[in-house]
Length: 306
Image (cartoon, rainbow, N blue to C red; front, top):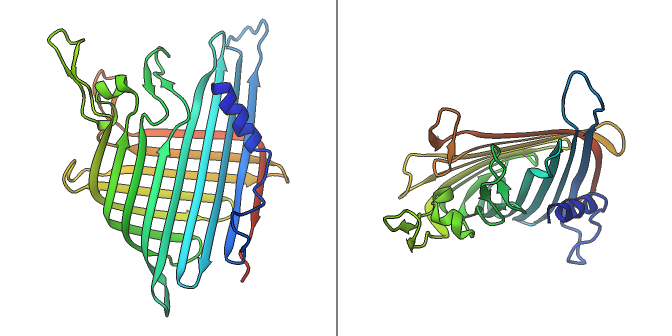
């Protein structure tokens, strides 16, 4: 399954998006980038020691934005998947992301094009199951375990085509854990199962979803080589005063027409995600991921006619 996903993303990395669902492309700006990086270490009688390793990472991002009159509709999809194999161990995933975003904005006033009423929907999950880093045997995630859906209404300020700020005081954040074993454990903040005295028999299964109502803020900057997106959420009724953080960055430096250096980072902090640490405590912690690679990148796009 993991190899099939990697092959799929590798295939996506070799194609371009050239058509839209509508024949009217006058108001659309469409584009994206895909990359595929690969590395290998092979050792034979190497006195200094080490392990053979193989790693492959694939990223695919696409956007389709429509501007007409006072209305603006922005859509994006970001997919990522990576595999790594060290020594005699099998392949394990090193990166896994599904992120779909759609946002509609309408100018507050005709004579001021920087302020908008806005509605946003953001979905995040991963393709495949993940296991703990220590043993590689304990399942800790899967597709839609967790899955996050954020829907909100508010206002946006867009000082330029590259920079935007969105604040939504009316936002619902939904967390899904479709794996019942993880739901029984109360993973990712859902209500855990009620167990019998033996600690094994389940009396009441854990809930597979959790809903929160609160406010959402997003700051986004994007140019031809760099994109940064900071998202903050705080609840009104649950986890009052606590702020969930999701900060993503992507840098693509084009070395030649098809060869590039890619840097992807993501920082997450969520009070509902408990992580065991070296200190023996299980508590919320800052999560950080970075992916650096040199490989093939292809950019494509169609600019909106003026």
